[in-house]
Image (tube, rainbow, N blue to C red):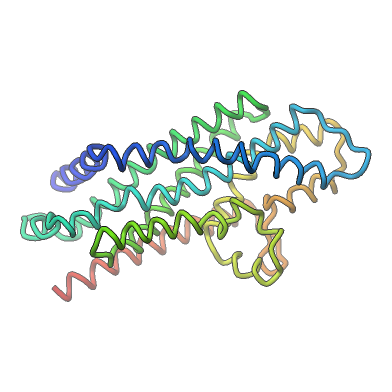
Length: 298
């Protein structure tokens, strides 16, 4: 355990010492929030108001809370995963610099080295994810706050689980990489495409039925929906309080992926958690297997 603790501290220290990597990871959520508010805010607002029945009047506070919840859930869904690919680049950097060879000839077991990379990446990514969540909640407090303490706690849980999923995914993807260029290329591809695949940029309900079925197999889709459900829980309660018909609220939930369907069957909140946790455990198992196979070959 002493060797594991020292390696985790070493990896965390190297990540935070690299000012470019750390500050780019930390400032990315803030930049994304500004971009989302600037470019996606009006899109979400127009989409929501356009979906309401004719004659419906909605208060600005409720509208801002609805749009804000959709914005911050989209941002967190992307950041929790894409930042993990950045923080996990230390695994690749150690191979490039030769530090991994030095660790290999040390008395520390290879399994300990692998666990240390995972734990350090999880701690660094979780710190940035929770910072992003705090900034998002501050934004929501300034624009339209309708959340309860329980909603915030569930968002903390969602962000933590999605972060662990991102770290597990990035550990498996980054494992075979051998150059800094490969790591940067993978990070760029993930940053560019993940938001579309998980339904953060555009609700999956807007895609074709065939694509919806394909995306329903991706765990990130369920992580996004969990964040959406809890970020918008207060807005839905307020809609019910002011007299929105239940079918209208349900249609809104369908339109922005709070309700997800797997081949026509509605997926419950518990089912979404099961998918996300199960996928994370599966990826962790794959990471362990990759390290075991590599150790046998060496």
